[in-house]
Length: 421
Ligand code: HEM
Image (cartoon, protein in one colour):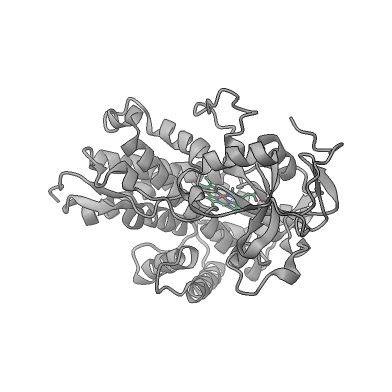
């Protein structure tokens, strides 16, 4: 294990230093296709904490080691979440592409210490009230409905017609948004645009509409509470204001939708392309649960997470980290850290991966359980309804999206025997 308390530093200068020529540009083709190889190379060349350049050559640190990610995420007093601590703000243009992830918002995501405990505590108790059996039933109903819309045609593009829509509808259902209404469908669509804009979409306008609809929802539930996440947040003795609840609900919905959608799609890809699963995909000898867990180890949705900001000068992995430096959590790299898996055998049989992060700001319990219910139900229902489902293209034709942050496919075209409706 490397020395966190940092007796020795390598000779690397801190980010921002002009001599810092060896920093790795965090982007490019390799991230889309074979990120694991790239992380291995980076680890070999730079150790467990690598100097990197974000969009626009903004310097940061990528934390690649499993012990180092655990250390950073469990020492909030050294590595905090409020992005206003960043020493690079003078160099960041207002239209910087990563602004939606690092620009400070008054939500749970950027709070620290007691304020974070207050906000995250409200979310946790509200999510704890979700009945997992009821959620599974609801996800199954959503799945059946979506499958019915394409089952008769014998083909589908699962990313847009299934994997993205199902968790969006399910999380809105959890929050008490009425199902089956035109304005709810509009909200599902706006969520997709704001989180993952396509060509011709206006993500800022969509985000504003999502905000306005959630504000309306909070008002409705204040007047007429029900058995849902929104009402439980409103009734919590912590007494959050409506504005705080709107912010935190948007965070919950956004945090749930994208990673769960990609978890579903990456699992379907594994089941449809890997021969260990292919033979048994409908027979069920190799379980969907195994595939879901393996994806969290090897193709985790949240590959890298931005981030944490150093509270003061400190050492990490032999590097000198300056006050205000940004650290990107390399969750995917940490999951395959050879220090943890020296034989390159990654343990699908346990769940000690860092895909839901770690520490105070980790994906709040019980969100990972709810995500598991959504993803498992989505995959199982699809395989039950369309048992001869196969890819409609060669495996090599499947492409990963050009993102270092979220690992997911651009599309997942499949074919199957058309179902008689
Ligand atoms: C029901 C589904 C989900 C919900 C409601 C949810 C909710 C949240 C929330 C509210 C946060 C912010 C926590 C905080 O700052 O205190 C968070 C963080 C996070 N979530 Fe989730 N999430 C869901 C699914 C997932 C999935 C499927 C993944 C990945 C496989 C994931 C990975 C993460 C990660 C990596 C973080 C960042 C934690 C950090 O800052 O260290 N989440 N989630």
